[in-house]
Length: 285
Ligand code: AMP
Image (cartoon, rainbow, N blue to C red; front, side, top):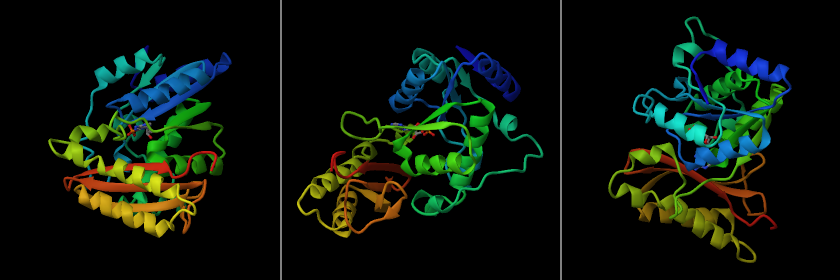
């Protein structure tokens, strides 16, 4: 496996693959890899001749008071993990490579980026779609794999690719969880002492919401959300938002059906912001 740090080298290799008729699968990450990231790599590996894992903590998608500087970084271990999953390349540019002096052109996300995480993180999704566009183009990606863990991000990226006619297939991957249900996240590293237990409030709320949704007829979305709020509060989380949306357009819905997804974000211990989501009814509903 090759570690590449320069855009010119990555582009040259990607073009040579393309000229040989090889397909390229890309897994964009911010590093500090865990099993969730590794599951994305395996999907890319199954689908494509070559797999590129990108490691880049993108300054454009962090707000001024967010954790850009503190975000955990472990490039050497990440390279090892990516290699074990069969990645051909880890592309780990620094900020000056992707945003050299004079950089001034960005991509702007639309309506889908305004609510949910976009409301509490202004500009976040513009940063995401800008870097994702660059990474997909410079790696000549045929396929790119993203996790459902960041469900709004996945939806925004699907729109990006459709709106800009980027010739890339976007594959969504299921959320990988710890044995007790906590969704894996690089930010789980911030959870100290009791916060690890408190962090389970998100999954507990999801589990209860899914149980309630199975009733015939299911309760109104507002009633399910009331229970979600109670569970998060009782277990020590500070809810940022909890919504039940149609997963095809992220619009809030009054009643639950087979396309309904609960999406929530909460601060644990007042500081660590975690997100989670799940479809409320089983697939066949
Ligand atoms: P990040 O490094 O947090 O930017 O995440 C990189 C990619 O991994 C994104 O597409 C995430 O949605 C995905 N991802 C993060 N955590 C998980 C998880 N627990 N299960 C599945 N995918 C995940």
